[in-house]
Length: 234
Image (cartoon, rainbow, N blue to C red; front, side, top):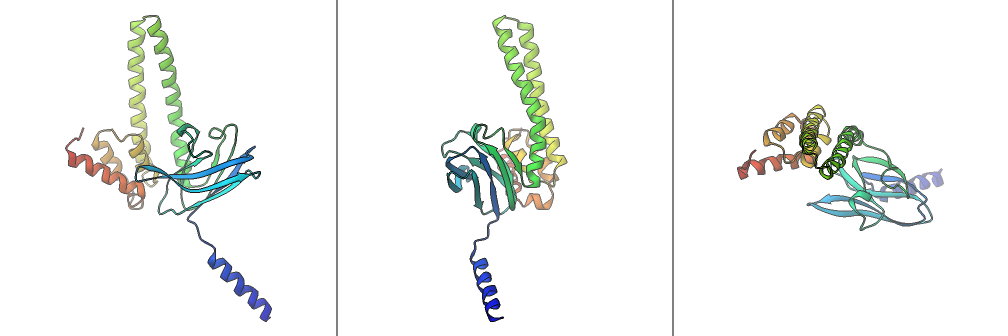
């Protein structure tokens, strides 16, 4: 009995000494043999590394970070990797699982984690369709210029402007419809930051108290206050 009690005591000491992490990011990168994986986030407008892992034969990884409120994190395979080669995800406290491949690191990424990530993916799905149409317009515009088709160029210009307006309106409406998610102020800051201040105010005023008190909720309030103080309200 004494031995059993001693083992429990030792187990409790070990458990207490293990560092508790707000966020754990784990998963597998198929076909990765060697390399370094970096977990990053934005701090004071600078991209910083919060954890890293050297991979040598085992494609599985586990990284950790402190986390006060839900925010955007990035997963890199190379410290100097470009933005297009970086997996972006919305993390909350707990575990986020990311499984992908070495060949298509970003496009093959399957992310299972926060509710905010699911909300962000819904937004990106619609915006992706609009972006694809915009790429088509650019190609058509190039051809129209080669053919000196002024009428076509003017038509495409109007359509391009309409796509941009639709993206703005969709983003604002999406934020308003998800006022209880930290994704709302994040989108206001990252996607429609140059919108008229009354639109940003509308999003800001709709946020729930919890979201207002989050990282991006506080940043949105400061951003709006700065615009109003500068007198550059549009």
